[in-house]
Image (cartoon, rainbow, N blue to C red; front, side, top):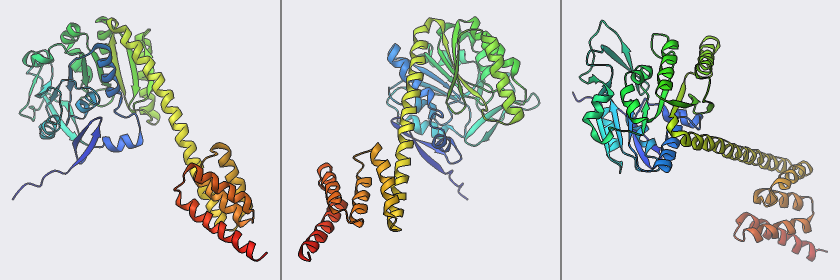
Length: 388
């Protein structure tokens, strides 16, 4: 009996349409939270604009959604590291669409071949679980990042390393310090205290401390929805202790934020940190202005619909009041102008109605609704002229 093929769905990421497993939830999250899984793409663009051509390493590549995000604007070579054999077919298929050089390492990043791990698939992602009593339930190998990069020489000195391994990020960073020290890459990783069975409070702080010792001086902290929470560039352990306290409070009393995404920048890239900070602030207020504009548009659209309901109820005086409010904000709103013309016609204010319809047709000579109402108005005026 032929095995049933897994259902997939498509998602546009930047300039590439990729395929996801049917259970993957990124599209649903992005519909609800507009910055979800978008920050990495912004970062990759800024890196290109600051440094020119560079290469990236994607640890926990899944089906290539992060690689597509890194390539959302510029063609950036990416080494995708993924040990989940369930993801490999879609990863290969998605990467085949990219213009930039891409390579795949099929395996997990660990301390050594002697790491004993098992993994679990859920909601389109994969989690590694340490378990000293079980063998690795995969044919994939587990080796150090240094060994992988030695094998994939095009990516030996990456400028960007993204890590998203559902709870193993701290361990991967601490066991890849040789690579990090050599290349001083920008690191983008998941900061989750609770994903693994072991509580990762001390592990998180020791990871941050290790990066500070290597010269990392600026940490952009995003909540799991993509909102920039803070930038830590001094009093590091105090600030991260406070951030940990916030996650623990969420876990204890009701979760609003589940984890952080961290962008760590080396002190030698101080200018990059300043550019990213400026971009984040400008982007925030630009999007906030767009949000206010969209909110106003929705509000005015609702008022126009309400005015139409009042017209249907022959409540012309209230409809006129509402339409005046709309036109005080948007004097050229054609829908509001047409409704106002209809109100004036029904209140026998034919001259006012004619003036409004002329205004609409000056703005939009082909407006069919305005032409229709102007014809009706002309018929009324002709009838009144004939009948005195």
